[in-house]
Structure formats: C-alpha cells, structure tokens
Length: 254
Image 1 (tube, rainbow, N blue to C red):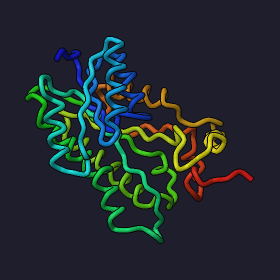
Image 2 (cartoon, rainbow, N blue to C red):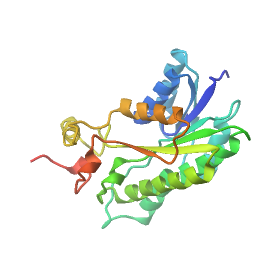
Image 3 (cartoon, rainbow, N blue to C red):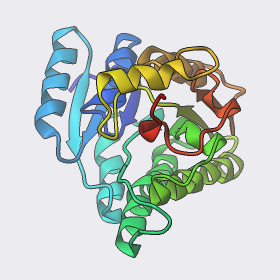
Image 4 (tube, one colour):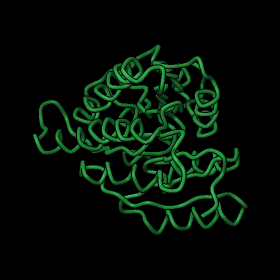
C-alpha cells in the first residue's frame, strides 16, 4: 500500500464528526486510518470515497472496550509506516442519571471513553521512533465546562478523559503533544428534532453553536502548532459561560 507522508488514526471515524475529520485531513495530505466497530459498511464507503478522490486511506475494525483490541489496533495502524497522529474521537454516549445508573453502564463508558484512549496513547508512543514526535487529540465535551448531571456516567468518563489528557501531556513530553477539543452540541443527538437542535444553538451567547468545520479547524490548529500541549479548545458558541441546569438536549423553549 502507498502511504502519504503523514499518517493519522481516527477512532470512530465511520460517521458523524469522525467521518468529517477523516475527509478533511485526507484533503490535507494525511493517510487516514478509519477505525470503526459496528459501522464497517459506512467505514468502507467513506474509505472508497476518499480513495476515489485521490487520497490514501484504510479501514480497521476493533472493539475499543477490549484492551487487547486497542493494542492490536495501533499495531495494525502503524504497519508499513508509523503513525504521526492519533485522534481519540470514538465515544460511548448512553443516557443515565445520578439517581438511576448501573455499575455496568459506568464501566462501559469508562472502558471506551477513558481506558481505550489511555491504552491507544501508550501504544502510539511505543511505535514512534527514538527521535520522532507525535500528536494526540482527545475529543471531549463542552459540558465539562458547564456541568449538569444529565448523562451522568458519560460525563464522568469525559471528565476522566480530560484529566488523562493533562497527565499524558506531562508524561509524554517532549515526544508527544496531547491536546483536546471540547465541542458543544454539533449534530442532532439524544433524540432531538431538527427544530430542537436549531433552538439549542440559538440559546448560546453567539446565537450559534459548534459546526463540524470548527472542529476541523481546531484539529488543524493543534496538528500544526508545535508549541501547543495540554490545551483544550472549547467550541460551543459561549454556552459554557452560561451553564444550563440540564443537558441542552432536554431544554425546551417556553
């Protein structure tokens, strides 16, 4: 297989934000490794599209709740050419509340949203050459900067990932830069209608929320800024400056 001069693994890249990141970074000349779990068909369609546009890309399938699969994913992704970047985008997102959650749901969120990025980052570091450097981007959630108790175990896992990123930036420097992007609601989720989605954006201080192009711009900034590490870029139209009592998916206009 022919590779581009730089190679990135994006987890959960078959659909939504991950697919947009894969598409745009491929346009920038990255060889994109598209990770998926259950969405293999969507991942293959995206890969074919990128290759049809002259980019280089491949698909790897792995269950990120399995530690051995995480290790194998990095080994497979770095075959032929080492990775220069890792974007931990894949995320489990299941609703529960602090008054009604299960140990299993908490463990499931932690496995995919925290343990997997930590293991992937550790393996990513191992595959770098002695004198090579790399970049890790963790996709967080802007609700960490305006907390509410909805999606309780999901929120706990993202808070843990945020702090993992700080520890990793300290521990892996100067070999690896570790940064994060914390988008607000970017695409409809949580059963939102299109009207509810638009209203959730209009509540923000700027009268609009994050768009996928903003996340791509932030990723490009992080990848290209050699002095940046340990930082989180919040993209939510100012929503974190006026925290809501509930997740935006449940806020209804009067």
